[in-house]
Structure formats: C-alpha cells, structure tokens
Length: 178
Image (cartoon, rainbow, N blue to C red; front, side, top):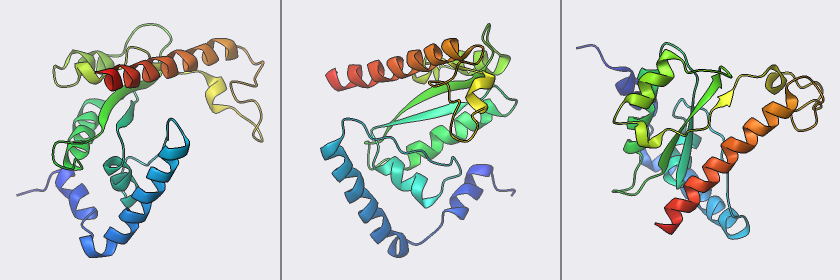
C-alpha cells in the first residue's frame, strides 16, 4: 500500500509527546499572556505541519488558510482541513477561513470556483479575495509597502487589504456573538 500525503505528513510530525510537551506548554502560556494584552493575536505559520504550526492550531480560535488559484489548490485545501481537524482537542478547534490569494482582479479561476462550490468548504470561504498586485511583492529596503506606496495600483491594493481585514473581523465578531 502506498502512503497518502496526509500519512506522510503525520509521519514527519511523529515526535513523541514527551519531547514536545514542554515546548507546547510554554507556547500555550505565551499565547495566553498575549491574549491578556491584545484583542487579537496573529501567528504566521508555514503550512507544512511543523511543531509551531501544530501548537499554534491547538491554541487558536481561528485559522486563515490562504489558497492560491493553482492546480493543486483543491487537493491542498482538503489536506489542510483534515490537518486542522486532527489538531482539535476533543470537538474544540480553530474555525477555518479560506482566503483566496493572488487572484485576478476580475473573475474567478476554475480552482476558486471548484472550492467555493464544494459543500464541504463553502461556509469557510471568505467573500473577499486578495488580488494579485505587483505592489504587494515589490517593497525595497522595507519601503514601498502598499500602505506607504505611491506606485500605480497601490491605492486599490490597500483598499483590497482593508476589505479582506474587515470581512475577517466581521466573521470573528459574528462567531463571538453567536
């Protein structure tokens, strides 16, 4: 039998509980201290399932899953959703929010349409998307980021960032109220 990608991911993460438990406990304490000071704590993790990613998921209420419109996007989102589910503590785990990233400014890709129309993922898909703007990837020496830029399309790109952030905040607030 050939192992699946998900099986291989778990093998790669197969560290004993004894060696990682102190690290996970310290990280959990750190996140709780941050929560006592800040309204929202963002943790940016590599999607490969490292100890930091695993521990972050266990200490999170929400997780943003950026998805680029590429050929493996549909398969990748399925793997990520299963990985997130596997890190739940009982029935408690982070709420996923699928954010389409690097999208065209007009229209939707085939992959985005496929994920949005999938009953398993529909409710997790954010309506706002992060469009592909050169200004997002073209800062020089820490300057020229979209909020400091006067490059073409920078105003539209900044507005795009604001719309995504506002939708994410509204999603979090509506869940807190529910």
